[in-house]
Amino acid sequence: MSALGAAHAAEAPPSVVRPNEPATVCALLAPSPWPATTVERRLHLRRLESAQDQCIGHAGFLAVLGALWLDEGDAETARVWLERSLLLEPDNLGALADHALALAALGEPAALKELASSWRSRSDVPPALLRRIESAAGAGTAFRLARARLGENMDWPRFAARGEASVLFGHDSNLAVSPRLTELTLTPPEGGDVVLPVISTPRRGAAVRADLSWQAAWELSPNRMVRTGLNFAARNAPSESSTDWYQAQAAASFTQRWNGWSASVQTDLSWFGGALTEPYALGRARLVLEQLGESCSHAAQFETDGRRQRDTRSADSTTVLLAWRLQCRPLGRRDWQWSLALRGGTDRPNHDGRPGGVQRSLGGVLRLEHRPDPLTTIDLSIGTLRLDDREGYSTLLENNAVRHQAQSFVSMEVSRALHTSWLPGAEWVVQLGRHRQSSNLALFRHEGTTAYTGLRWPW
Image (cartoon, rainbow, N blue to C red):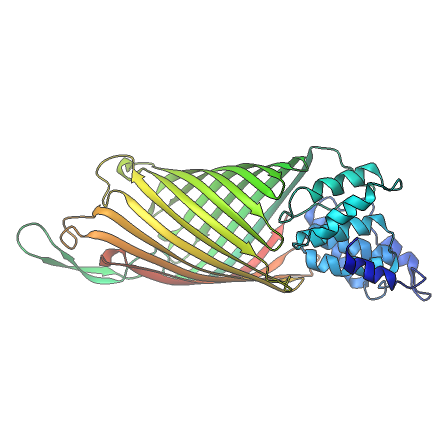
């Protein structure tokens, strides 16, 4: 048990339940069996939240409330309720285990390791619970650790699956990602420059975006996991239907953890298309090595991508890139998290004749996430990417100048869990974004702003 938990336990009152507490109501709210799906869990969580004031003195109720928040992925809120439970009932094995797991998920693994060590000499701890705590103590702390409630089945492999859907409505100021041009200057090798009148105006309008995804995970052992997923997304602009697009993706990964490290092999295959976009497929393979620290984690990634166009074979290419990511929680602020990702790579055409030839890229993304309360999340991202061709793009543009591009974006998402019976587990989402691309060739300059709002819900 952690020092903080021991301090709370030393101050525990002699009675677990207050004299005027409706113990029967509070006890009946404890789930049996435990909710099997995300929707069921969030429904039960809301039932408990509605009764938490009257059950504030019931140790079992508070332990279940903390365990539900831990399953929800909010370790900080789980820690608060579990410490209240242990204040009333210091020897509850399930609450002790969940409290240690919550601290470990917050980057404080000492309590988990201490609990595993102290339980080895006790005969009243169920073997399955002891094995789960021991395996979690050695698996690394940056992973979301599964709940280890007393009596839970610990057999392997363990399977979990969930789906998610969203429908967002909004406005896009540049639906086709087009430049704003009134004329285009051509520079043929002979005859002098030719100025052509061009009407290129970004198309703007209302749009609706839909997203449907399904994910599954098999925990083969405490340190090995297989994941797979499917995703489909599409956008429709009623007034500019020629700018509509769609994409689909299938992905799979295998992760191995050991002594504060993890290694993952990931692969996915995506398909893109639309009225203004020639359909193409993109296959990726990644190798990710991550070091898991108490407050920060570092990850290095090697990735290779293959792009295949449906018709334009000269645009087929292979990309190789390296990436590094740092993700941290500020000390003392468990409601904040930030990450920095840097990446660089080379994209090589598979056939001769692609304008620009080999292209090199270098970029980075800074992301900040804040949870002002357990039901609200604010996610802010700022990124930039530099793209440089090795050869001249075209003899007709700036006398075959080598193309240089710089992309930048800023985006923000605010999501808030809703209390609705007709769509349990739903979130209200607001997304704002701004993107811009500059280039020495006017044909490749564009910018745009997006604003969307709608619902996202699990299934």
